[in-house]
Length: 138
Image 1 (tube, helix red, strand yellow):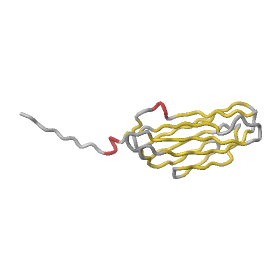
Image 2: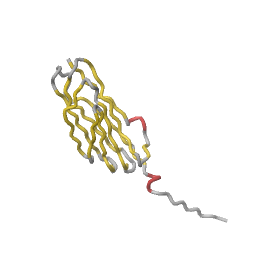
Image 3: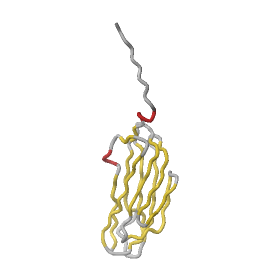
Image 4: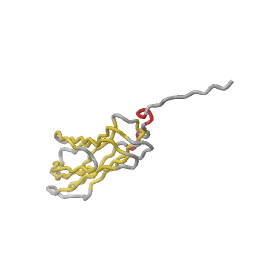
């Protein structure tokens, strides 16, 4: 006797994005008082879309955050040296970019940390969700 079984799987349960982030300082080293840009790029490597995606970054206090520009997202909020951006939903291979212009206030080498996460999707690969961008101020 053969028995056929059917399973219903919700779309939310099968939503498995692989969100990745990379970042760097666009121009460095810089002299104290000069500006440069931190560039953070996120991408959904799939195989499914991701929902309720956020990008957040921290700028060391020795670097003054001057302004920011978001491409491919819904908006950002800034509190001191912390910036959190709502990216929304990303389809397979979709990208978004956050540019942060900073001014070097003190000589030294500093790392700005950023990460990406989704509150409504399962991330298949956790190892590519964080990055540190190094800036040297002379």
